[in-house]
Amino acid sequence: MTRSLMESARRGVRVVLLLPGAIDNRIVRHASRAGFGELFESGIEIYEYQAGLLHAKTMVIDGGWATIGSTNLDTRSFALNEEVNLVVYSYDVAVRLEKVFADDFGDARRIDPETWRERGAVDRLLEALSLPIRREL
Image 1 (tube, rainbow, N blue to C red):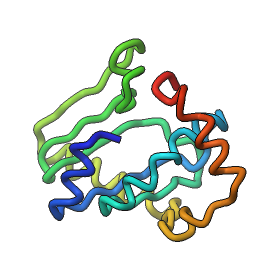
Image 2 (image 1 turned 90 degrees about the horizontal axis):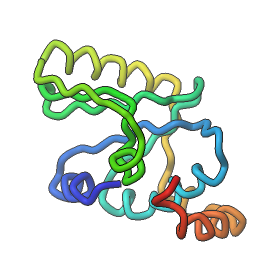
Image 3 (image 1 turned 90 degrees about the vertical axis):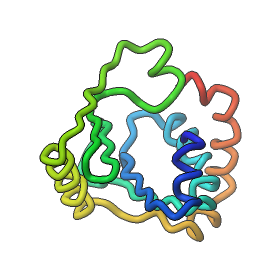
Image 4 (image 1 turned 135 degrees about the vertical axis):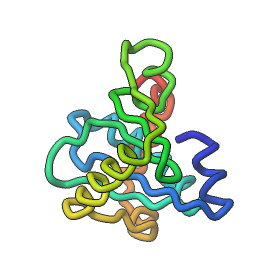
């Protein structure tokens, strides 16, 4: 996750991530979850969508700026993958995306920081093993 999101959360901006609960690759799941500790320490809330595979990437900032597309916020997507996002300055679009986001919480579960910290040794090991290749996933 980007440092700017963590800095925003530290400054009192509410940052909520809705991540896929189902991921089609276990190593990707462990690599993603390895970074949860830093996010929790920054005050970021994490939820996992349970109703199916969540692939769209959306973001709404201050109810007027929005982006939607296929680009992950990672090195691989920016440097190698041919992906695209649309950025819109529109309160109407931002409100629509916020509604979809809010509706998706009906099928999401909150990841509790304490429960995550108490995860098992196998999960911790798989997360550690994923770190050397994390940028490539």
